[in-house]
Length: 326
Image (cartoon, rainbow, N blue to C red):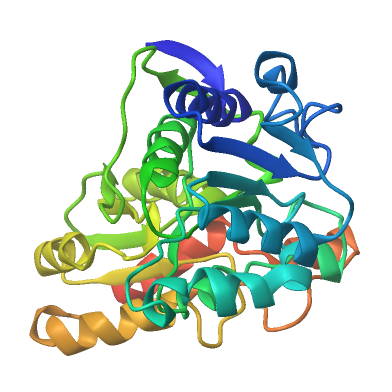
């Protein structure tokens, strides 16, 4: 194992797949000459050249369409958005073309494409640059949605995504690119749609994903000092998500807290809540508890932003609530 940064794991995954398959290429804003807005494509232009690492204009709708069209000629593009906030400009291509090509062509065409880039908040960036859209994309039949929380998962899942024959939304975080973790030096992939228990426990299940799961880890340490054992599940894949992993854990702990960096209405936590009460209601000893951002656009003020974003104190409070402890 070698310890590398999250951004290096992303770069390694893309480079290894481009060496393995000449139909894979990278396209996006500043991915080539600038080595990526967050240096996740550092050195790739030098190795693969401008025909496979392509700088684009600031025209998300245009280059998303070009990339989707290229899948029909046998290519497997990786499209980087500088932020998924900008993907809204190109969302028509993602929703109405990439996600629907297989069905509308009667199975004659696949769309093996990966749309990747940072999602969610990243500090003092204001309301239009601090949004999480995983539930928007996950609501679309035909799309798969992946959000890794560490370098090991990022590399293994991105390699799997690039090899997949379906369109995939691969979401990262600006605040995770510098995170370090152990990553195998050899080739490996992780299965899409399989969650991982990051911490085993007996009293309460916490389900989360992406960078916000770090707050669950902090909360688990605090709760352990108070004699409460929590089990933490990292979904990793949002669609399809691992129902069985959640149900097995809930049937063991009998309590569920959901932690998600998104607005509270109609999110992934809502879907999981419905699934658990439908399929494991008799195992629950308390109502399911959701922890999300405040139901407002992200504030610019650091003081207000701190109140807006979920933290470990919120998780501790949620676990104690379902444990019926004050």
